Image (cartoon, rainbow, N blue to C red):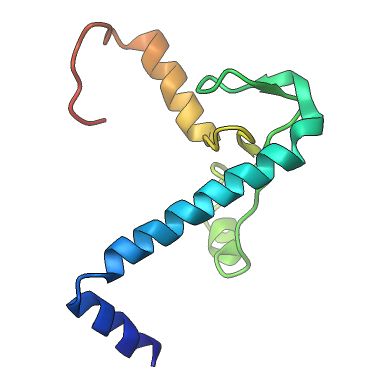
Length: 116
């Protein structure tokens, strides 16, 4: 039934716009929830280089039970753990690291970049 409904929406060219709207709504609600929940942790500690707000701790993320064996089996050390998401803007630790590297190592001021 679910596959038939998905096919129906794809034929109407509505599946991807609906999926995109759904994911955007979840992201929006997640950021609002974490802003409210982590408001008590505002202050000294971690500073987000996207929004500039400091928190004592950031939002953790742990792998789901379905992928946990693959993560452990291949000794993946990045992307999960404590202090992953900024509670205010939702940026992840690897996004903040990439921004810091770009700003400090690449001479891109005054240049136009199509895609990164």
